[in-house]
Figure (tube, rainbow, N blue to C red):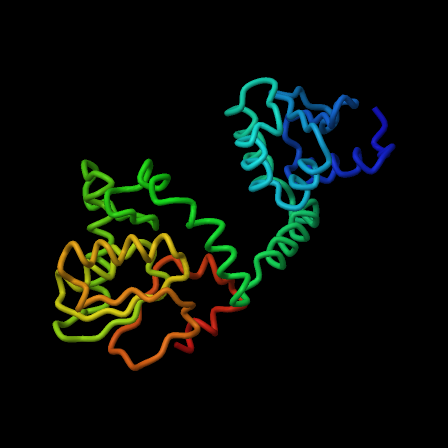
Length: 265
C-alpha cells in the first residue's frame, strides 16, 4: 500500500495513526480503503463515518474517540479493550520525534480550553453541570472526585475519600476559629469536612452551578450554613483575608501558564 496520501481524508487518518504510534490498529473512513501502520496485524478496526468525527479525532484523539463512541458515531470491529490497550501502549512508547503532531494537538486543545473567565465557565459547565444524578452513579456518597487515599487495603472508596480530606486538613494544620478559602470546591465535601471536624470558617469558590447548589443544600441539612459559604464565582474574584488557602484538583483545570494567577490569591 502506498504511504503517500491520496486525499485529505487519508492524510488525516495518517495523522491520527502518527499520534497513536505503531499500534496494531486499522482505520477506515466511510467506505474507503483501510489504513494501518506498515507491518502490523490489526487487533481491531476503527470505522469513522463522517468528517465531523474524523476532525474530532484529529484535534483531540482521546476526547474525540470517547465522545464519538458514546454517541454511536464510530464503530469498533473487533475487541474494544484490545484496541484501547494497543493504542495507549503504542502512544506511550512512541519516540519523541514521532510525536510532533501530538504536541501540536495538545497546543490546539490548550487554545480551545483557555483560562479566560468566559472560557473557564464554559469548560466547567460542559464537564460538571451534567446533572448530579450522573455523578452519583460512580462517585462516593459525598461526590468527592479527586484522588482518594487508602490507609489500608480494605478501605472502601468512601473511607479513602474521608481519609484524603483528613490528610489535607492535617497538612494545613487547621486550628479552631481560623478562616479558610477554598478554590474549586467541587460538591463541597472538603469545606464541610474542615468546618465540621476542625472548627474553621470557610469561603468556598466554584463556577459550577450544579455543584454549588448541591453543596449549599448539604450545608443547610448539616447545620453548617453559617460556618461555610459556597460562592458561585470565579476564584479570580475572591476577596478578603484568610488564615489558610486550600485548593485540590484545580491545577489540571487552569493549566501551567496560569498557576501564577492562582498563587496570587
